[in-house]
Length: 287
Length: 287
Image (cartoon, rainbow over all chains, first blue to last red; front, side, top):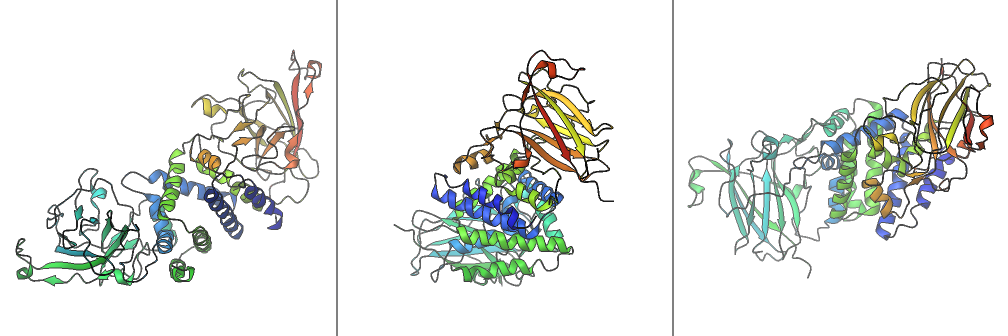
């Protein structure tokens, strides 16, 4: 059948959307039908290929649990998440850039005072995170919530090892100087969970599943525009080929090693430790 | 961010697909990324809209069971299934046209002799299906498997009422004259299952979920090219607005009422009965 003789199907589907009560639903639905049909016309799937596509999406949905969101992984690995991010966060200038949320965000993150350790004794190179939050003019932002998480030195998140234990993640609040801090361990590069359909897709596409080492940060509070971002460890071998396309140059930092003598007085350490010192620039919330 | 300044994301994703070992996987993946990104650029989703899209797809996947395939419903209601069908089945001439498989096909269909009743005593107007299978030249096709199913007079399929009972579906074999027959009841128009995410989508799009009354037929066998189709009941109020776009004019038939005296001698009936008399033209299998 020629493209022309199947055009009635697209026209008919579009005509059924005319009565959608919500204008945004109508325009999104129309765009979805046009682009989906154009995709199908381009690839001309066989019946069994289309069945395989249905089966793939079904498996992606059924792989999702409260601790693992396979559809976010699919969106991430197809570059869709970073594109949505790019279209939403138009950096006007000095604000810290955003990146993907990722699949391991959980809502029951423990709340801590600044300066505590969140590594639960996991092995690894000690890391001191020394952060500051300011507005576009450099004024400290007080009382902002910082939600952080990271992989351990084997590249796993807590939720991949345990249903209930929470570590290497925590929620902090910026102090009267806009500062926050915590002790942890150096994160490791790691494969995104690749034992499911998205992993199979990456393999079929000849791609590796690795992400460069990074620490997640999510900032929110009454006074600021929320920001989801990471800070990546400079020198990581996967910075140029992040499986989810999340790296932006401005988000790469050196996690330099320091002598024990340079540790803060209230937290003596006995061996060299890595330090991430970073200022995050947030937009004030629109009033 | 302008479209141009997000173009690096699409380019980067496409560049990662270059090493896909299978050429078909590569070209499908490239087309998917281009069309998906074009869709996103057109609708410019907010972060919460994209999260809602992820949530929608997740729910669709998690609604799927062996008896209900919500992703097929989604494909059907977006016209994708009919488009794939149209691109695959290019009728060269007299062959019976195809339509969607639909979500209620099951593999454990009971096998029957011709002429038996498959309605399990369900209430409704008695229906006699008198079918014949021929090739393009009118020669009878012998030993073809006919897999049929239909709704009851309330519009439900067996699998919607029971996990284990199978009725109003069956598998038959064409006889030495290419004929097959069975007794049943008139099918009813019905809503596709609309208590899930696809039903919510239809409602948001201002669409009804109904399909016009029809009987499903799937034909297969060593000698023939498989065919999936329906025969629709002429006069149904939903013929012009089938929720899954499955109606083709050539598949609509009158299910006329007949007097008891016109029933076959080996199956006497006491009241009027509807009859579907139809010849199906299949292509012989490629040798």
